[in-house]
Amino acid sequence: MIRDCSAIHRTGFTPNTQVNMVWQYDEEKGRIHSLYELAKAKAWNATTDVCWRDFNRTQSLPASLESDPLLGFASYEALSEDEKHHISWWRHGIEISEILHGEQGALLVASQLVACMPTVESKLFASSQVFDEARHVEFFSRYLQDIVGEIHPPSSELRRLIQTMVDDPRWDMKFIACQILIESLAMAKFQEIRQSTRVPVLAFAIDYIAGDEARHVKFGTEFLKGYLQGLSSAELALRSDFVLDNVLRLANSLNINTRIAEKYDWDVAALRHHLRQYRIRHPEINRNRFRQLLINLKAVGLLTERTQTRMLTMELLA
Ligand SMILES: [Fe+2]
Ligand SMILES: [Fe+2]
Image 1: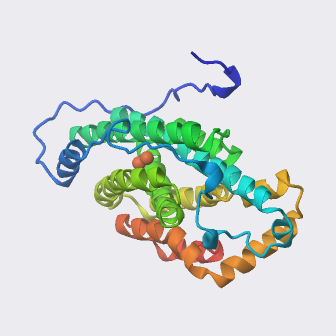
Image 2: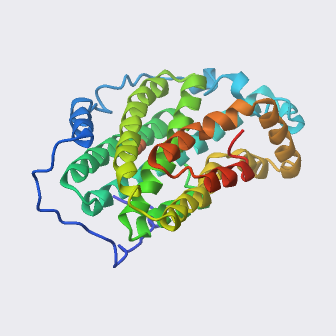
């Protein structure tokens, strides 16, 4: 039962969405088929395979202290230990809520891909991805409710990105946005969380989820590299621009420190300066965050000289 109607965002299927009905089933079984077999073999159960145990959040921070970019920021350091503890869990709740909503975005787009993909093999894999993303939604929503205690609404940047993907009538734009953009940044984010989390059930489930996401990325790169070879350089530029135009939107939605500054009435400019200095001292953060995207753009032939120049200008490359 839906209790809060404002929590529903209604949108219509775009009338010109490309749906491909394919009546040819004798394609040679290739790499996508092997990935589909792997997906069936590796399916896990978020209820019974994950060790859900009571976790007392009052006795632990959600992540290791060393990974906190707010350390050394005067307004943060002036808080009591209790307030810092509260902020850590509040920030963790927002961060994981963004991931949860992003997983629902991936679920919606993967379900559209079942209809839109142009081969039977890719439709079958996309159907396995739908079930994977459903488990991810299931895990993160239970984690937020049982362990963290609340689910925050999605940021406006994430809402817009999901809307863009769902509304775009072209299957390859949906595919590129989901498999290359979202999956690449999500994998980097999962690695970041896996290294710093202090919550056993989160570490446990991320190992399962990251395995699923790696398969989705592989599906994307395997399928796209053949398809994109047939496009003109203008068509390729349009697609790489689409990725880069949206990458900052997604990265900003995952960067929630300015939301904290607004909530606690801190000087946003001072916090931005502090975070910039932190990034300069830790260039590996940006490198790790965008490395997977770089690898995947290269794998599918979208990392042209022009794309690299744009990425440098946008400070996505360290
Ligand atoms: Fe996912
Ligand atoms: Fe995924």
